[in-house]
Image (cartoon, rainbow, N blue to C red; front, side, top):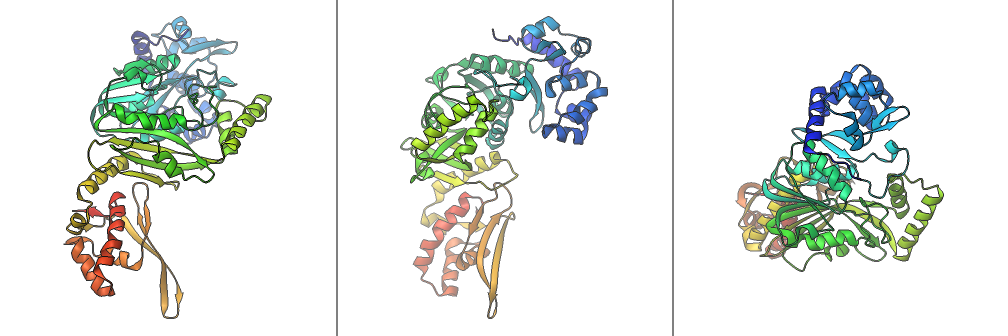
Length: 496
């Protein structure tokens, strides 16, 4: 039987949370930065001590964030407007010999300008054992990463495909007028409904496989955190396994998503792809796309060794890789990888935009280095720059354009000793914001960029450069234009 997190029940729960200040700011204020940091590291004792004199808020912290058992009297005081029997019947609480414990994971989650509450299932550590097959995953690194990578421009309609506990729809409420959230799992939709009710959001829900619940509909934006785990075609856990073999789940979403977007609509998802012996990953993922009409940006953030990959996902589900169950599952998984010549598993973000006219831009890039800025604003800007290049990327247009180098872009030079001083061996253009793009340049390209201050069109700069370096003008233009296009695409050269 599924929990019924009704409007009435969640309204009372929200009132209790608001009265106790159980939100991101309230929890931080009660715990202090050191105990909060310790809790983030998986060290609960400092938070347990700090919450001891925090009243109702302390009870909620120990229940939902620490997984402690609390005496019934303290729980009644903290949730005085709620009936304990109703909370127990709907899995908000569970009775144990030690006292009352949380039955669901309900925790504050911070957006840019507000705090939400997210309802999910207890994880393996909170449960004290493996999670069930219909486990509904809470806030994790993947969901937070996708939220940070999502474009946030205002849209009318947005689809959260495979909503899970509803995290992406929460963030979408900042910029989308109407939100539809779908999932194959009944339990996921029940908990997502609780998340939406608890936060006062009106979200349309639909149950079904993949795009089935929204057949014949189109949206301005689609966000998807699919069951992207790759391996044998099986379903142990609905939150991560699709039943499709290899990386077919990611391929399916990439292939089908554009047909559910309005013209100019943007779709974004987390995805995984196989690195197979003798195969370029970029060729593999770009082969998933429709023939035309789709701009695509594939960003690879990591590549995992098969052994590490299997162990990580076993532990994620609460399965010890050393146990008989873990050894059996790992063996089957690794056999499948070996049989299919899998050398690694790539992971990253995919951005798609439906464009029914003009040349479609498809770019696959490695961004495995560390960077701080969220990718979402960069995604929007990348799409704008692709639009500009589509309209102005011809040789004639580029040569007539005045460019400038943004202040965030620096030129780094590495030199080695020479007979007459120093000789530059590396010239690297480095963008300090966004994802920290880097481009290596030769001496001529560096000299060209030094002249990009908005005063002269590119053609005049190349002409002066050809004369100064005694090079043929046509050859210099042919070499410069691809570099200019790449730098514009990465926001390192700005058209005026």
